[in-house]
Length: 88
Figure 1 (cartoon, rainbow, N blue to C red):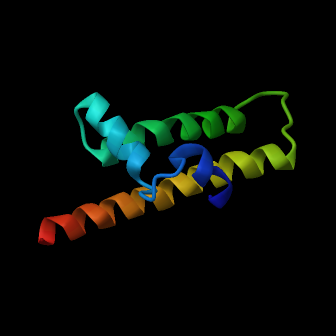
Figure 2 (cartoon, rainbow, N blue to C red):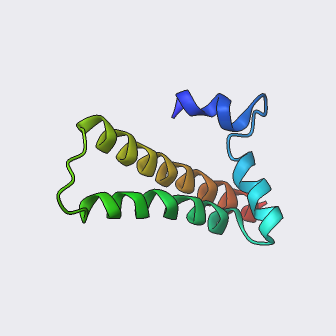
Figure 3 (cartoon, helix red, strand yellow):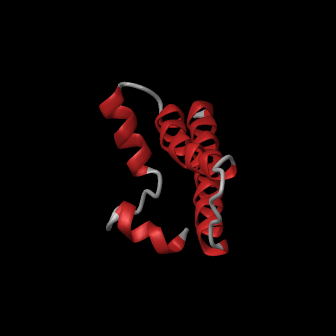
């Protein structure tokens, strides 16, 4: 996850800023914006799992699985931050 942080957040200290910005653009919640982004990764994994006569390198599997896990960890952070803000 650290490898992609700079790419997606730049100098912004808010690691969830991209999801908040996407939510604002889509007039939705950060959770829903993130879920849409996660869906792309899940569909890619699903396609790999059901591809006939195609063999993927372990590194490809690792990248796709890691990306999906990272989005799930980020979703946990978005949910936790949202719950924290609701308590204020």
